[in-house]
Length: 98
Image (cartoon, rainbow, N blue to C red; front, side, top):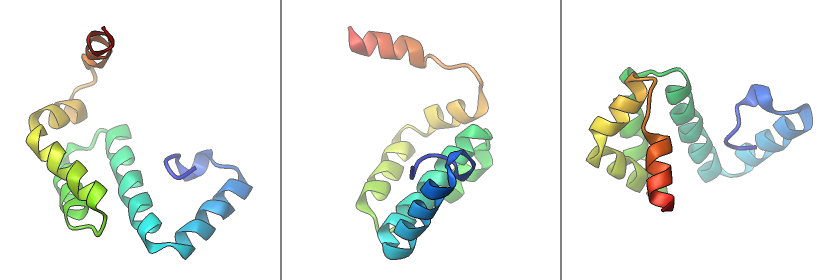
């Protein structure tokens, strides 16, 4: 429920998510960063990447700081994913599986 868009959730699910977010500030930070990240990719907005990286890098959650650090190492690939509609993800997935 925490990675889906709010519009995709049923009313009861929305209430549960809201309750969780009110009760735990760390989950709220993770939720906000995750929603921003997915929205950036759904809308293909590469101009938001630097802002997201700054927020993730300065968050209190080490998982997001490490994730942002990893993105910075492969920034060209992330920018390509945001800028271009095509991807070699299927090919890479098959190669990795083999």
